[in-house]
Length: 186
Image 1 (cartoon, rainbow, N blue to C red):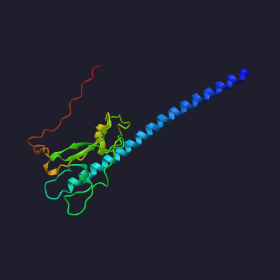
Image 2: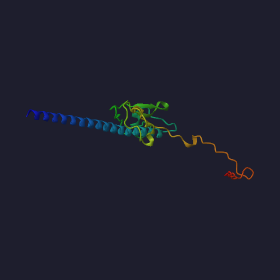
Image 3: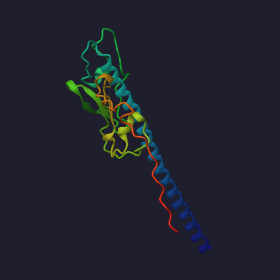
Image 4: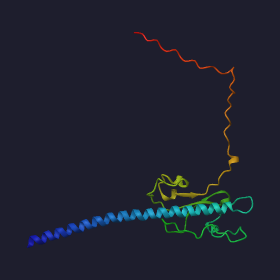
């Protein structure tokens, strides 16, 4: 009887170890999934801020374009005669749970982009959309910068000079002659 209790105790102890290992593995998978969800949310919010900054810039009244001076300018554009909102609310950073963002300054001390203040290492380092190609290989979330880049007009881009080739004429063309075949010696 004493021997049977020892085996039961070992069986229960073994079962507790197995359950603990399974729960530990589940916790790691759950933690990674939560981080992936936060990354997706950060991408969504970063795109929302970048698009709002672009709309604010493009809808500047007059000819001199301006960037917002603060994120609150995206909630209500006081430059317009009627109420114009470029973003519904100021989002929290999903990684730091703070409303504070890193701001990227542009011309005229305006904001051209945002980034997370989290120094954590991202899980996603590749397979981004084309618009986010700068995020490839980022070492932390602070490197995930969502910046509006003003498109350059095609007229101001330098064009390559056309190649100058002389026109074909009988005097400057040489007919190709086949090379003689090498002689074979036995």
